[in-house]
Length: 206
Ligand SMILES: Cc1cc2nc3c(=O)[nH]c(=O)nc-3n(C[C@H](O)[C@H](O)[C@H](O)COP(=O)(O)O)c2cc1C
Image (cartoon, rainbow, N blue to C red):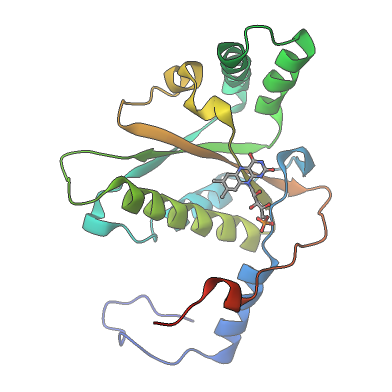
């Protein structure tokens, strides 16, 4: 057990099984695209666990610069409408089948959140990139918790995120930006895991 009691020593050796568990969890997570995510999604308690994991993300000045909007089943049609409208904003000549394809994307994963970051506010010390890093940490915590619970998950983005129609649907403030959707559900088919980059590709030494 890793103690979270305030009196716990700041630094202590972890039992090897804790390290192995962390490594196994991190290493075996992979993107499972929404078309491969089916019912059942997480139940209420599992959903709460995934959401709570976000709160453990580092957050400079504790601004809580990110939030998540859960897209319920009853709101999927409105999201589909926003995706269709977003496509038409970009391409007024879009074909009916393209519009239908855009609309259909709203109905895929059983559990769907939009991740939103607040890029600016009264605290000018914390720049947009720090806020986005914090949001990324929160999102990764959520992905790992979903994975620990046995669900598949994926982040999805796309041009619709910046569209007027999506911003209006989610009531985004001028300083807010939609980062990505978080899709969670039961895995119906996983791809083979991708090869991970070797540390040498992303580490240099000063
Ligand atoms: C912010 C963000 C947005 C993403 N949006 C999409 C997307 O729209 N479609 C998609 O197929 N994958 C999307 N991905 C997932 C990446 O493609 C995926 O993480 C990558 O293929 C590596 O796979 P892995 O998660 O299994 O390591 C997104 C990832 C991030 C970080």
